[in-house]
Amino acid sequence: MAIEPWRIAKVIKIENETANTRRFWMEVPELERFDFKPGQFVTLDLPIHEKKNKRWRSYSIASWPDGSNVFELVIVLMEEGAGTTYLFNEVTVGSEILFRGAQGVFTLPEVMETDYYLICTGTGIAPFRSMLHGITRHSIPHKNVYLIFGTRKVENLLYFEELNALAAANEGIHYIPVLSREDWDGVKGYVHQVYKELISKKKNGDELPPAHFYLCGWKNMIDEAKETITAMGYDRKAIHQEIYG
Figure 1 (tube, rainbow, N blue to C red):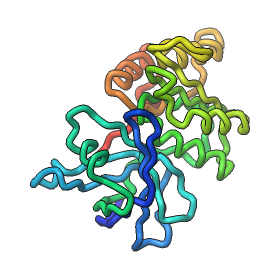
Figure 2 (figure 1 turned 135 degrees about the horizontal axis):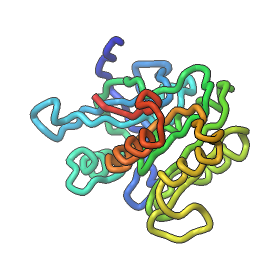
Figure 3 (figure 1 turned 30 degrees about the vertical axis):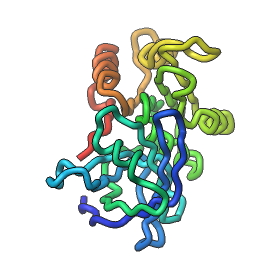
């Protein structure tokens, strides 16, 4: 796969999504359209260090290919994080940022022949938001696609109304937000119990239903998910995770 060249992205819009999460819309002036596959990421070169590899920060694209030269990132402010501190404190509408991309193979196949479980926490929802819009807007054949999003409180639910509406309007798309620190009308607990229960209901005796699992988010969640899914009897090849590089 060819490495994309470094280009300039101009910030054209910024919005707060939650108290510590911000959405950045970026335009690529030199391109008429910025093409990418849902699930891919871009790498930003931020002026936060003398060494290049210590300036680079990678983020999954939260928007979907729409024929324009604009893409969206959703970024959480990390405590003592040099990259996100710069983005939150120094970047404004009109700022220009050097970036490379889109890159990555964390993407869906053209035909989805099994059930897919998109399991995420925090801003790990970004590539899955892109994927769901890609599936629905391009009528990609699919069976059941479960977006299982874990976070702490209602105030941390990213894209909540949008994803609820998307799931309600599209057969086979299921959006299941899970809160770990607050009682509410939805599911309480952690993401692992959700996919375990869904699969348990689909089992035919001891036979596991065919499935693929995509993981993105907090490291502890990803590690536990991999352990849980393989312990259930699934092959490691059925598990896909985002790795930036």
